Image 1 (cartoon, rainbow, N blue to C red):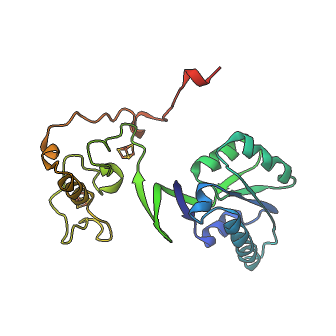
Image 2: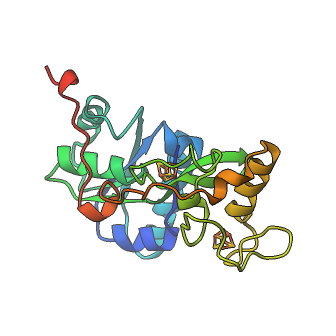
Image 3: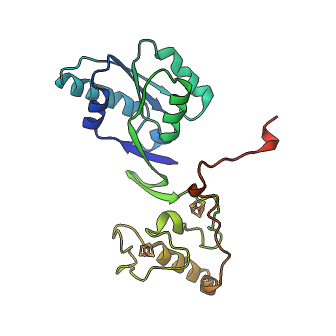
Length: 223
Ligand code: SF4
Ligand code: SF4
């Protein structure tokens, strides 16, 4: 899922000062799963903003609405019915949702309420870790199902950097396992350590983010 977390409330208050009527818009999919932008978070944030703005001398009307997904046009359309008189929208969706809403309703200023951080998995309650950086040329088949792009601080493809900390922790952040230790252990358990020293194909980076906006075109789905 895509994960993110609230921007600081003080920052949001600053962003919204001077507005008369604000829509706080939630998204009931990824950001709801990571407790950043679902209905519950929308209803929690709205009074905090109201209070924060009031303290700064701004009386603002805040309305709330959560839709199924802010990244799909058919759901985004639903926001039209709650936009009457609104002079700013604070979207608690990921960056994709914010952009979809901004594109559909171009007359109203749209602000992000969430910082989108990663494509991640929920490891345990309250802990999410990044698992994919959407590099566009997946190497998981060569790395025993562990992503060195998203999980190694240096995105190394040919083994550990040499600085791995005691206990198999990453030298950059000791909270994280060194993914290359995990890859080695998994290879060892499978009796396939030798495969790690084979010369691999060069990874293609043309489909990563360096080539500008990515596109996926499926002619078979366009008619
Ligand atoms: S190799 Fe690329 S596509 Fe595969 S999991 Fe890692 S970042 Fe994602
Ligand atoms: S310690 Fe491991 S995960 Fe951390 S940067 Fe080095 S190789 Fe990557």
